[in-house]
Length: 138
Image (tube, rainbow, N blue to C red):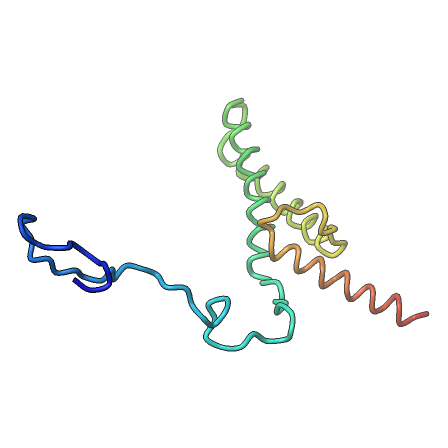
C-alpha cells in the first residue's frame, strides 16, 4: 500500500484492499468567504419597504379586531346576523381610518419587532427624510 493508507495487507480481511477517496468531504475554499468574486467596497444595499406588505399588515390587524368583536357578539347572542354585520362594518371603517391616520404620523422603529422588516424600513426612510428637512433648514 502507498502512503500508509488502508490495510498493510488485504490477506484475511475479506476485502480487495482497494481504498476509495471520501467524496463527501467538504474542502475549505481558498477564495475567502465562499464568494467566487471579490467583495464589493460598498455597504449593504438598503431596500425600500414594500407598500403592499405594509397595507396587508394594517388590514390584517383591523380584521383581527373585527373578528374578535364578531365572536364576542355571537357569544352574547343578543343581536341578529344583520346587526352584527353592520356593527362589524362600522368598526372596520373606523379602524381603517385610524390606521391610515396612524400611518401618516408614523411609529418609531424602536417600538417594532425584529420580524417587521418593512415597517422598520419605512420608519427609517421617514426618519431620514425628516433629518434632511431639519438639517437643510439650518
